[in-house]
Length: 301
Ligand SMILES: Nc1nc2c(c(=O)[nH]1)N[C@@H](CN(C=O)c1ccc(C(=O)N[C@@H](CCC(=O)O)C(=O)O)cc1)CN2
Ligand SMILES: [Mg+2]
Image 1 (cartoon, rainbow, N blue to C red):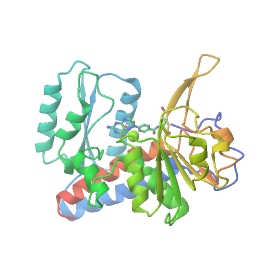
Image 2: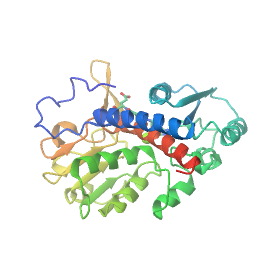
Image 3: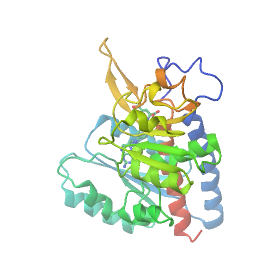
Image 4: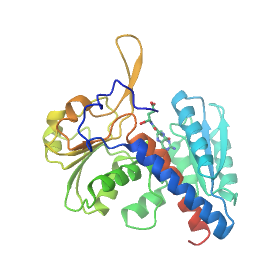
């Protein structure tokens, strides 16, 4: 997960690159301090259970990294690796067991799940106070109504990067491209909480480049490689690239690119996240933050 030499980040002016990898490392160090303090004050160790169904190679890497970073922060990590043909009922039974386990404060099922499993049904079965992905309808509702939600990790990470870079976001026009329950919608809610004027654009939006050109902040979460071009941006816009797309190169190799065409966007933007090394590392750091939060709440903090 290092920034490869192929990404033209070397000659960018200081401050233009929003370094999510470095920010995530700092966040994890703070989480480790807070985990130790919680153990000392309340005798409780946060526990995270990660469930993987099937053998998707990317998911296997994400789950491995989640477990490794959980342990590095001083938390307990439990991994459940189930075969791709696991019946939905068995997965629901495992979630019931984890819901009832007092040593587990966070539960997540790695997505995507195999086709025969209804992801919405699985998410709804997780206790909302242990739903460290923040995907349960209860947490989505709490986020929308300003309550104490567990917030989805990727948009939470984007929000932390934006606030760190810009300070006060109030009055900024933010365009979120993508309306998924996992990124686009919660991202819009978080930006609204920061008093941004928020536009959510999607596949049916008319003249998307013109909509983007109005934005002080662009969050691209559309899943289309290098779609957002430099001439779609208002000069000085801040660009957060949520996309992780693996594309084939002419030499037969592959590389990971975002939803933003970095080469044309970086000269126009005032700041931009790279892919890799931008939003991705924040997703796991925020998962650890949510697990700590869930544990703190479980002891009344
Ligand atoms: N239950 C969940 N499933 C999925 C989530 C999620 O938040 N919860 N998000 C993604 C996968 N994901 C974490 O689970 C994730 C994706 C990417 C990264 C990351 O650090 N990416 C690197 C690049 C990696 C590469 O080269 O392939 C980066 O951007 O630097 C972390 C976590 C879908 N499923
Ligand atoms: Mg994610």
